[in-house]
Length: 285
Image (cartoon, rainbow, N blue to C red; front, side, top):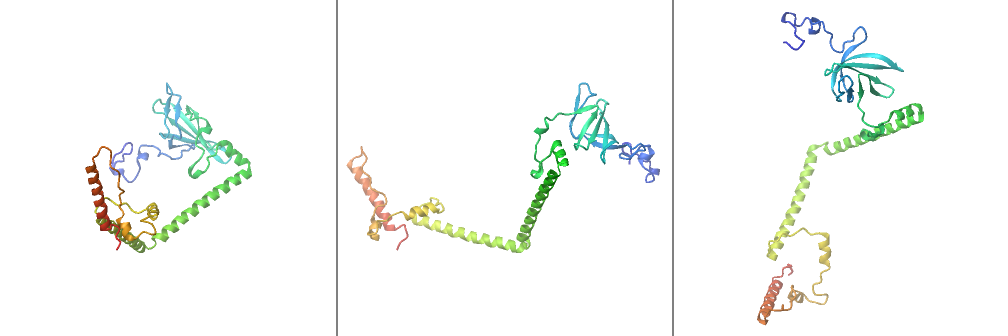
């Protein structure tokens, strides 16, 4: 099989590698001078000063970079990554900064300015504060501040762990027996379905008694309160008097209508009132 710079003849396949045949060093292999070639990804956008005019290299762009140690910060090594910008051929060097826990451009370019340090978001995931360089230095120097920060982190981890355990316990309690859980859900659905069926039957029966096709809304608390305030004839009235009482009050004859039309309207309303009272729409007796 042939790949770019990876061809191995058939008679030597399995006995050697493409790097040995082409006298190339595999990426990441440490050389005798302490350097090695690694795949480096831009941690932030960088202005290339070799390009004319200056061009920006976006964050996340990857390069084959030469990695070597250039010093130490206490016991932490400082690494330098020297890469080549293929557009202009210029070299850029980026070093680690253990003191401030960041990268810095030391040669061939400049980091893009993202604004003042106080402009970035100050809260990380879970509400944990992101400390500035000054705050980190203060915590290193102040033992009580460092202890307080560790106590807050421990409490946050403890609260998160307790919440996760509660969720696991609730899930195990509800679904430890899927068959029983399914049976309870089916029983609850059947009960609700029977209640809905009784309510629908009661609505249909009321529609038939009233002789109407109007949709009847479900009863509310306000409806029950208003129904209790209705007075059907008073305490001294009999049932026959209440049934004979017109539901719709008689109105006076409108101006502009003759006497004959007024009597016809009054007779029509009286017939409707008597018919409704005799049919007893309230289902009594």
